[in-house]
Picture (cartoon, helix red, strand yellow):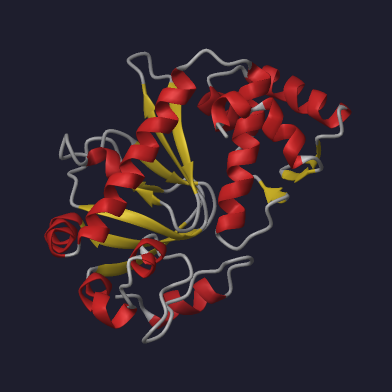
Length: 253
């Protein structure tokens, strides 16, 4: 369980919405609360799920939560901070696979190989809820909504990967990335138009399978078109609907 010192540090993090809730309310960033509450489960009924949770952290910028080929024993729900997952090809080139925000889960892509197929690296100070996966699997058999939620999260990851593999323009990719990121922040209680980008421009370019200078040109074009305003890693969506129209091929309806 989380130590008092850890809990104190967590409460001091700027912009954090993580908390442990109380007897009847879930942690503000619980990855399972929305699915469980929508199905009629309340926190007292999910005491078994709460008992599976181990609070871990802090992990500081650049530190690994897990590494490629580590044995798969648990999944990690982000409580605070941002994480990127990555792998390296045979020539040692980095490939960014995704970025994860509070309330999102990393490690699901390790279920089949039984070991982690990628690294997970903190982009800023991050805390996690660690769930033993064997125990989680046993609970999912008793609570179908938990099992269904796990399947939905895994399906979303596979869907994102297939979209990036398709033939889309640089403008479409960058616009869709910004709109999706803004939607995810907003769903977790942050501003949906004013974003702090924990990831670097080169990481974004790598993730979108674009050159870094291409991303810079696209962002410059979006600024000229008054779609965004940016300064360093602070970015504001001035015309979210306009961006959505640009990235519609990836975002869907």
